[in-house]
Amino acid sequence: MPSKVGPQDIEALVRIAADAAAEKKALDVVALRVAELLVVTDYFLLATGANDRQVHGIADSIEGALREAGAKPIGREGERELRWVLLDYGDFVVHVFRPDEREFYRLEKLWSDAPRLELPAEVVNASRPAPAEPDASEGRDS
Image (tube, rainbow, N blue to C red; front, side, top):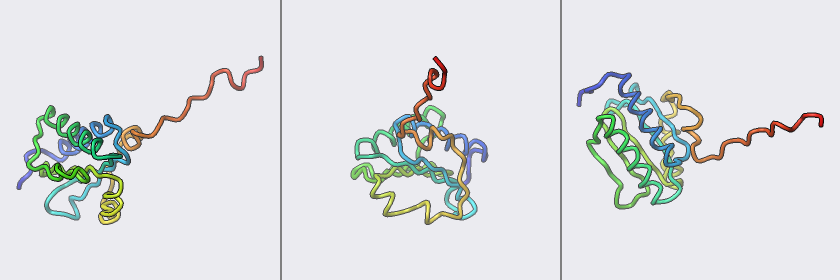
């Protein structure tokens, strides 16, 4: 299927999807550029939800954000089991896993030759607490 948008647009949509995953506190959000390794898609976006409910929420959030940006999935799989939901947008595919499924399939290792799209730390580690700010009064002589 030929691409309907340019490479910059695809990357922008992947970033929108990553941000939407982060809003739902997804774990370990990773974007892989697989275009040089696969003929069927340009990017994989991987995210993990701690449980079935979170996997569903992350997938719904991504789909909603991308719909607002004008992108509709051509396929959605895994809805019944909610252990691994796949959203296929043609030019990129979103995978939202439960931790055990992500560990079992290890797509990052399988596609380790694929360059990563750099994402902000707050997106990659959205579910991790932010480091504590140092107390402004510490270190002052009273």
